[in-house]
Image: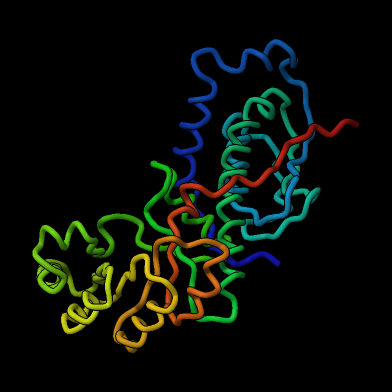
Length: 286
C-alpha cells in the first residue's frame, strides 16, 4: 500500500522538468531519434523497476513526456510511496514515439534519483521501527531540486527538516563561535525572530547542553554523539525541547540511536548520496 503523500502542483514541477529537457535537447534536438523514427509514428512502453524499492517522482517523469507531446498518455501504475519489486510496472506510456524516446532519459533521471531517496529513507524508517524516532532529511540537497528530493523523503516515510534558511533558526557551531557562546546565540536569535519561528541549536558536548537548556531552545541538535551519550542527553533535556541526533547516521547505527530516546534522526546523505533505484523504459512490441 502506498503512503499518502500530498501531490506537488504542476506549477512547481514544470520549470524544473522543462529546464532538464532543454539541457538534454541542446541546440539541435534529439538527432538520433529524429533520424530513425518517422514523425507521427506511435509507440507504447512501460517503465518497470529492476530492483526492490520505493517509488517517488512518477508525476515528474510523466510531465517530461507530456511536455514534449501533450497528447502522451501516461498511466501511473505505482504512485509515489509505493513499494516495488523487480519487474513491477510503474508506468505505462502511449503516444508519439519520437517524444517518448527524447524524454526517456530525463524522465528516468528524475524517477530513478527520487526513488533512490525514497528507498533509502524507507530503509532507515524500518530500522527505527518500534521507537518514537522519526527520520528526517537536511538541506544537503541538489541545487534546484530540493523540493523534489524532500518530497521523496516523505514518500519513503520520513519527515522534512527545514526547507531553507528562512523558515527556522538552526544555530550551528560556527554561529556559536562568532556569536560568543550557546546561551547568547539563543538569546540573540530569540530577540531577532518572530514568535512563530522555532529555534534549534547544535551542541557537541553534554556540558554545552546543560549550559544552553536554561535559554529554552525549541530543539537541540545532538551532533555526533554515540548512543550512550545520546541517552544521557535525552535525560538532561527531559522533554523540554525536541532532540535531534545527527552525524554518522547509517543503516546499521540507526537502531541503537533510535533506542536512545531521541525524537529525530537526521541524515544528510539521504539527499546527497542515496543510490538511485534502477528503473528502465522498454518499448512494448505488438
